[in-house]
Length: 314
Image (tube, rainbow, N blue to C red; front, side, top):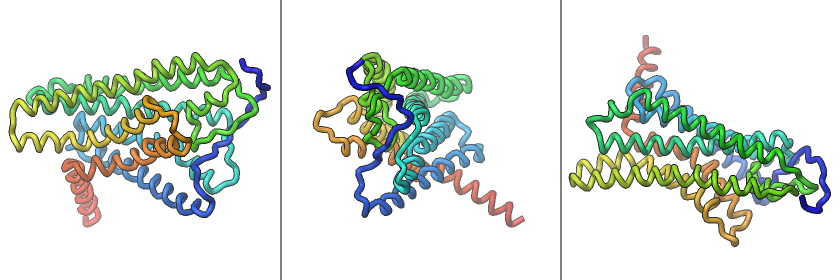
């Protein structure tokens, strides 16, 4: 324990984004449009997968879970950010801050593991197309969906409980737009070495192992494609994997740059902008990436609208 005076912190203050007051309304409209787009886009994917039997396959089972995760992940931070931009009250209750941190970690980790499941699905589909149905059995698919939910529950709860045992002093200002784990640790006047060790080892494994598994899956895919050099096969394979690789690059690029390769020269503004990339931009872009580049999703959209049109005509 440091020598600073201990006080009972009942709330924190989220400073939000470093935006000038004259630009506040403009950015509010921008972020509101991005959030609404995220909600509608991911809901559309969920509805299409539920309504179209052609999409009742392992790949779209994982995609539906990823869309749900993205929808919730964005909803953890965006409503509070939008509220603070239109209000003079920047406070968030202590319990509310820990709750936000828990769900932020939960849905971030869930998306992380679901990307691994999707990479494995693509690996089996391209490298073992004749055995795809046998390998990707309903039992295995259920396991690949339930395992991420269980692991992320444990990981998020672990960090939340470790944070709850810490004491906070007079400084309750968080220079961020959400209750970030590292920002809260900086405010604590307790010994945070256990928290930092858990972040380094467990958090590192949560990021590095899934990332390496994805890299291995795509390395095997590329190796399999090169063994049978066919222009048509290469185009089909990369068309199938292109959308997934785009999402992986966007998600892991910002995460690794922010947490695994931090720079002493990183300013609060730079870290906030990078956080916006994977908390706001990535969940918004995923529906466009998976629908605009995917023939199955386009076909499902047409079939669902045709059914609705025919039902109304009757």
